[in-house]
Length: 256
Image: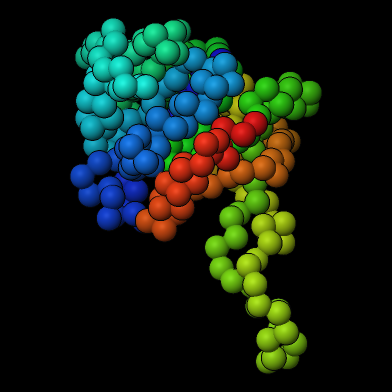
């Protein structure tokens, strides 16, 4: 099963980093976040990736052609007009394809273009700006158990603000908000059957406000609840938090 990584958005909420590069190329430690995303899948045995390129896609294309993993540079890397494929001797059968999906294309259109490039295949789709320790094997098992067209991974939003416990106007408790206090949100990590493409009406439609609601109305969307680590990178603060977590011997997104 191929992994589609949405890597074409403008990244307007973290302009400090994205004025000269796409969001997936923002560094976490010494590697771009998309490298860490691919690495987390590779650790779980997944080897085929399609990067849906858009904004400053040429930066990702250049990175792919000069890919450096574990200190090894330019291992059998080559470019074609439409894609870039990388093989290296650490991830021996790893294939990464960069697919140009347009500057103004929305997430639905990017997914549709990638699915059309590999017709009649089930795919896993995720975002190129966050990290998680979702167990992909468990996610696939859940998807296959319900027999619907699509699965979305539901996650708890990170606790970002200090929680105020109030009684009338008096603060009776002050502390960090518990993740479990919040509801479930879309965490990406979608598994999509080929017929999902029929629910995407055009390239300028967001997957989240177009196909997903249609799938839900049709009774074809199920949610896999993930209570483990999940962290987006929407702000500079979150980027710095992920960089700090990387300093541990085993960052949480590799603790499956």
